[in-house]
Amino acid sequence: MVAIQKLIKVITHNGATVLFVLVILLSVAGVIQVPTESLIAYLSTHVMNGFLAVMIAMTLATVVAPIALLPLIPVIAPMLGPFLTAVAAWLGWTFGAVIAFSIARYGGKPLLLRFVREDTLHRFESRIPHDAHFFAIFALRMVIPVDMLSYALGLFSTVSLGVYTAASSLGILWFSFAFSYLGYAYDSGDTVLFVGYSVASAIIFAGAFWYTFRAVKRATPKKE
Image 1 (spheres, rainbow, N blue to C red):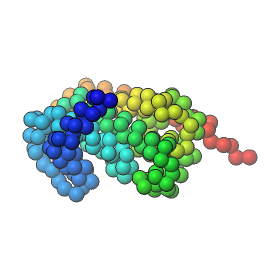
Image 2 (spheres, helix red, strand yellow; image 1 turned 135 degrees about the vertical axis):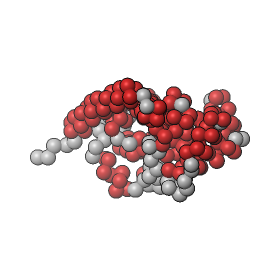
Image 3 (tube, rainbow, N blue to C red; image 1 turned 180 degrees about the horizontal axis):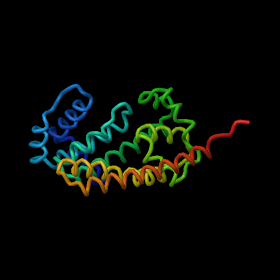
Image 4 (cartoon, one colour; image 1 turned 120 degrees about the horizontal axis):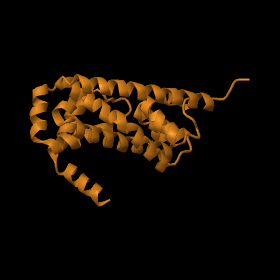
């Protein structure tokens, strides 16, 4: 709790971080265009601001379902560094996923509909096992976008917040690092690193997709 309070204090008193978050969100949304040189110059001298900005931006993007910042990770990684970018993305995605799950679980459908469309939500209802367990959530996290999965599991499943948080955090971990290091490898021309992460990610995704497909098929009621 003390650590969280210190983090909030830093964010609140650091206007540059908040401004950078807004710049990132507006840039990804296509409202403004930010020169790459400007981002590199800023991140090279404000590493912690960049780390916090990426983390906050990923959290907000996860809670506000229409915003997708996944393409941002490979772009930011060469500027901020692949490890810091991966950790920031992982923390942001995890925080956002827990917030989204809590909104659905404890706020109910009326509050949830302020964040997502009802028809979009119901499309996920038939794909989510109502008795989802740790490994099912771990696999689902690698296949389905973070925001909608969090909302759907919070509303339609009986999984506890603790199990959901642990499974989601681990499920998000690989691709947070994969996208970050892929962007770094591509920018630096490191073919071995790029191919290694690409092949490993493809294998992991295929395995998670297969497991998820079987889990959803078992959970879907058979037509008589």
